[in-house]
Length: 225
Image (cartoon, rainbow, N blue to C red; front, side, top):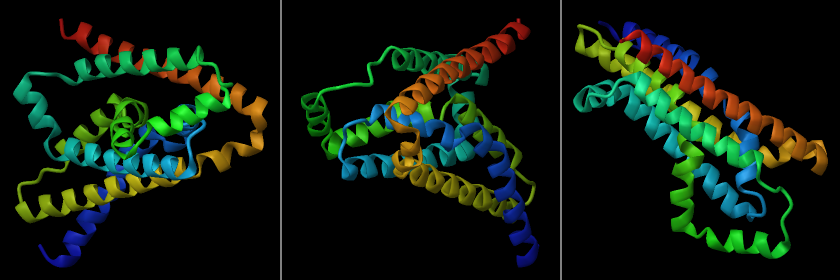
């Protein structure tokens, strides 16, 4: 294959990966969750957390595309099992958000901000902010499906396909970082009361999403019996 054909294949894979993963991951829908879980933190800590979440999203999507199907086969784990387990985590987190008090004293905010050192930010950035709230089982399953569809009989074509998919994962990670970085400014016009109402609604929707993920995985498991 010539270079033009390889570039075309990479471009098609990039668009294919974006179309398959981005609507499911949907960073703007996770922005209110990020605002809720980082209330009272300093701007620098919030920015560091958003950057790490974007990085972890890229690594998770890239890993799922490259080796996700092989890892699941090695451990004998099916995609429906991943959906059920991840959906339970999403639902439990959303349930806690529904019952969280959004008003806190200055001492509580100061204690929360001080408790997030650089090392702690790295931990919180992965769980639960990256997985499963931002890049959940649906996004991982979609990335694994994309990776399985990128293989080709020609090695050069496969490399071009995966290069385009990795570029798509990088763009998604960048989009997550920018969305979370400026989430507070985007939601600020709602006001304090409007923000609380909006966050409650998003928590309920997130709970419904978690239940839906569990139900989809359970249906696939039942059909396999």
